[in-house]
Image (tube, helix red, strand yellow):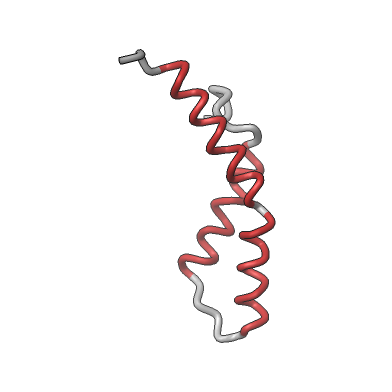
Length: 66
């Protein structure tokens, strides 16, 4: 998607995926780690919104109006 111009940065998207995986597949008993995972997810919200907007714009250009 980055090569097509749909994502602002492949590195930031990889980070989003890594954080998502930590939250979805890791259930730490340590509240500090839970808080760190939640904070990391919160900090990437602007990158997530930018990725969504890039994909949305890409699809608008590619899909026929109808």
